[in-house]
Image (cartoon, rainbow, N blue to C red; front, top):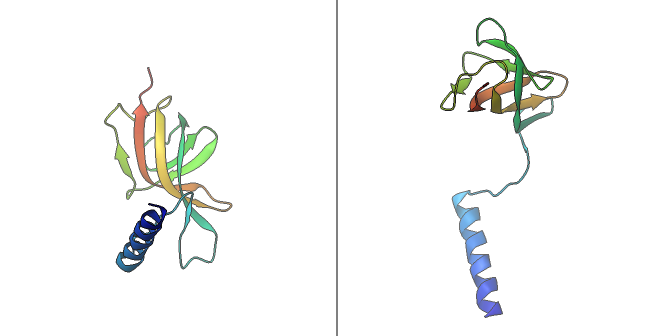
Length: 109
């Protein structure tokens, strides 16, 4: 049985390598950048917003840059002060977190 398990694991790894499937845990680094950029998710509560959605948001003391390209998902309420959000984006050293996606998890009550 042990030999079968090892053989199946080797076959699975071979398929993953041939198809280009990667298994990763933790943050991913963006290739081709001179600065350290790390793809991450952050969670928190919106403390302040600019007058429009575009600009720098304060999420639990972190500066989050939201651009026209940022996808904002408001299935669980509006993105406003006090809302709990999950943000996917890039953390560049020494800069604001650049958001690709902002998803409202719970609106302000």
